[in-house]
Amino acid sequence: MNGPAPPAITLGDNVVYPLSLADGGVLLVDGGPDFDLADGEPTWAAAVRQARALGFAPDDVSVVLVTHAHIDHAGLVSRWAAVGARILVGAADVPAVRAGRASNEAQREPRFAELRRHGCPDDVIARLAALRGTRALRWTPCPREAMDTVTRERDLPLAGGDTLRVIPAPGHTPGNLVAFVPERGDLYSGDTILPTTIPTPGLHFPTAVDAELEGGVNVDAPRWPSLPPFLRSVAALRALAARRVLPGHGGVVDDAEALFERFAAHHARRARQVRRALAAGPTTAHAIARGMFPRLPAERIGQAMTEVIGHLDVIAEQGAAVAAARGGIIEWRAAST
Ligand SMILES: [Zn+2]
Image (cartoon, rainbow, N blue to C red; front, side, top):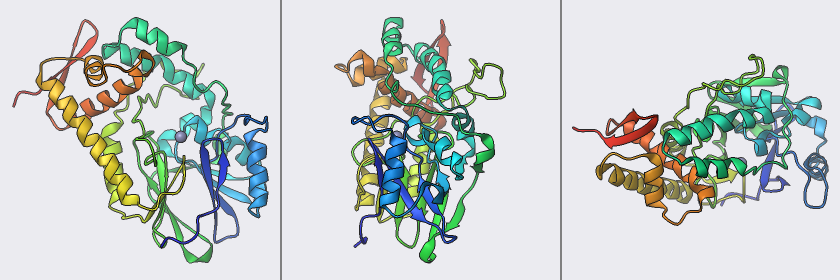
């Protein structure tokens, strides 16, 4: 048995977990998204209301642990910082939290350019560019002075004697963090492990947004290969033998091992599919994704390509695939052994 369900603040699709610290403050796992709920209530007001119902005030929140710098997890951190919270952020995610919504905008052009390099046709990219999925979400930049950077595991004492271990788990973002309470076997997973979907490895250009740069955008930022570290992070978390997973979206999962097994099986299957495509001759990430998902609508091909590119990164790291640019397009083939 895992004991009672933990208290949680629910803001749209996102879950924010409050934990009592040994020093009397409250730590939140994630800051939550900033938008107006269907009934018009801003999520900040909903968070304050739910906090009060759980027995604490907004200014009791002394720490917000940002699992990763995505708009739905970090959108409200500037509000928590304004009422006195310290914001814990993985080092590589600090520029994005500091830039807020501008970090999303800065990733757009490098992402489209990368999809184009990997064989995505221009008309498909134009359709992807027309999608503005997070338009309704706000993300106010968080002042650097309010942030504490996490570069390695860190233990925070909880009320009652338990420990919250903050663990860098790069993958879903470069500075992605999770947290584990060894005494309870609870893993606060953010979006690293989710109950009903396999999280995307994404296409990341961590230096695309740079608050030191005038205008803030570095268009030549290199891509950070995300899936190899993502798979290593998840394997390391699996070895913790967590009893339950408390994810950033959806409910608590009491069979943590089943989630890890589903994640591993999914990526093993994808790796086999990509290797098979490579064995058939030189090809692009776009052609591989099209072959794997022939009926996928154009609007979703970017996501499929992201996963394929991730597996090409993994296979290349293993020395089994090589890339060569031809006419500005990256072609992949199996490495001759
Ligand atoms: Zn999320």
